[in-house]
View 1 (cartoon, rainbow over the protein chains, first blue to last red):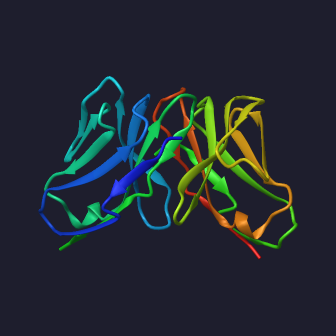
View 2 (cartoon, chains in turn brown, yellow; view 1 turned 45 degrees about the vertical axis):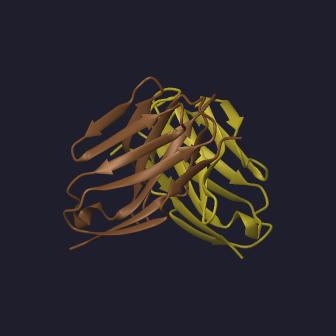
Length: 111
Length: 112
């Protein structure tokens, strides 16, 4: 059974800092990996999707990498802003249409 | 944002009563999903649909049923609600298998 772990569970940084969020998964036979953002009381917003054949994806200040063989992904946020404060979730898709989610990293960016 | 709405957004009900949650999309996406989100468990898939009248079970399907009679609507029914079904329920859609999933705003359900 696939298990997804996100470390740290919470992170607080000053504005402007570059930061890395980590995601690890136990079964490397994945189809793709997605990073989501969730604001309090809201739904999930898709940030980046990395196919299993890809090494990284970039969108603006966000860069996600994938090392499938070691079961790891990172989300790099450059020049963090208070508006980046949210919970960040990673999810992996294995066989079938099922996504397995981590519990997320709660990020606070302090002005 | 993808055109996904969920209704109701909040509901309080009593143990043993039936409850139906509705997910409506305007994107004409083929796949629709129901998840629940609970502290300590993250999001878990309940059921999903890959077309009208085509559904399959997810990780935590016991106590839930679904129906999809139209492309745009996916209904989740709790036949007899229990306190363990108190949760936040999210609907999601995707254009194809393995494609990006887009989530609705969620429904907060409290079963007393």
